[in-house]
Length: 136
Image (tube, rainbow, N blue to C red; front, side, top):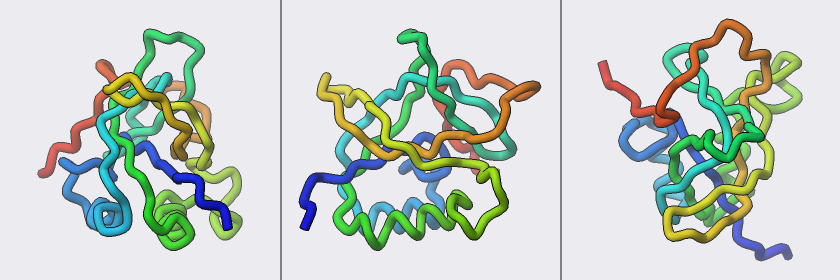
């Protein structure tokens, strides 16, 4: 059995303040590890954001890292939510990738990140790269 800790970095509708149903799921099956940053750019896709990696260390997306208690249970559910997987049209809107993220305490961890998988041409850049969902 692989008992390496499995982390996920969330930057949109899965964050604590988003108060979404999927966040409740995350809260139930994961422990909050801390606020964190990911080197990337954040774009407005619709009412939700999409992250893409960046080579520029000044591009940092703000988000949260969670330690998944039951990754094998939670990840498939999150994949469904993010429409990632063979059952969704290709190319998937997001692809789940292992990325390095920096916790605010200075520690870096490898975490799953849902990276936006379509061209970002014409999309609005979110600056600063901190998506706080405004509940209507």
